[in-house]
Image 1 (tube, rainbow, N blue to C red):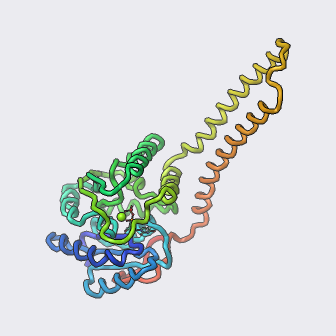
Image 2 (image 1 turned 90 degrees about the horizontal axis):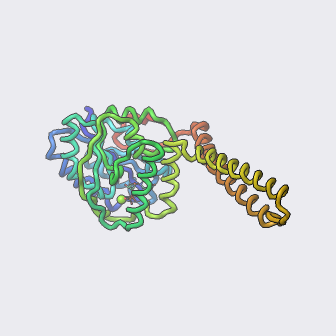
Image 3 (image 1 turned 180 degrees about the horizontal axis):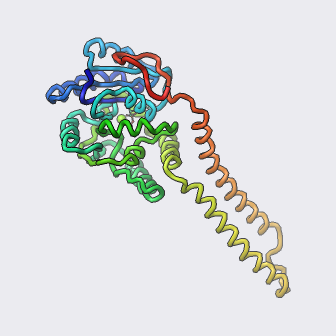
Length: 318
Ligand code: UDP
Ligand code: MG
């Protein structure tokens, strides 16, 4: 029988937290009238996470698991979860208990009131640097300005989604996946509940450096906007206008002034280097899109499944 609520958690090297995650989820959900499943997607962990999932499944058949053949990344792990969850509503959570299971009943209540997406809004973010907070704010402002996709501030990936939202997302086959943007894009009735984001239960955070965050930001922008491409056009017009002006100035100077103004290598060098820079940046921007188009065209599977626990058939974009 299909469960009413599916809880999906992507797992990458989380052997220490899975037992506690299961305990807390079970404690909360057993007080709810709805049937449920906890679907753990093992994203190529290098620790014993897979064995822990197998044990949990043996002990409690409501725990189900998928193990990838290697690490495919957070967004893909979540996608596999959405592909295999059976619930009428799906709750997406981090495995590390930063998103407390105690919020689920409130999310489920809002869903029963007729909302299709219920975001978790972080009231406080303990243990985050001001740098992360500042860049996050700047990033969501920018996204809104250039795409008109309104990603609610202070939300992460912790959310409940109705079956029809999940089915809509499953129809978006793109390889560069930015779920925080894809969910608002889908539309339907979306709302939020506030919660206190906890510190990680155990283990280490994986998204903590600018090196990890920057590709995420570029993926987000390129999947939802042509703005960077239009930027090249804009630079082109500005440079063309400036050089048209410069040509007039140079002609006038040559014809009417006797002074040897605007001569020498420096002027030439500076203008050539400037244009070279602008051109390389524009090429780079085109390259970012081209690479992503190449990824799409190759049409490779999004993920490869190694093992499953409690899942009848492997489906989805394989
Ligand atoms: N995660 C994953 N694949 C990865 C990296 C992370 O599935 O390549 C999972 C991880 O196990 C956790 C969630 O994504 O459940 C969020 O990761 P983390 O807690 O490290 O990120 P943060 O809370 O710092 O954003
Ligand atoms: Mg975390």
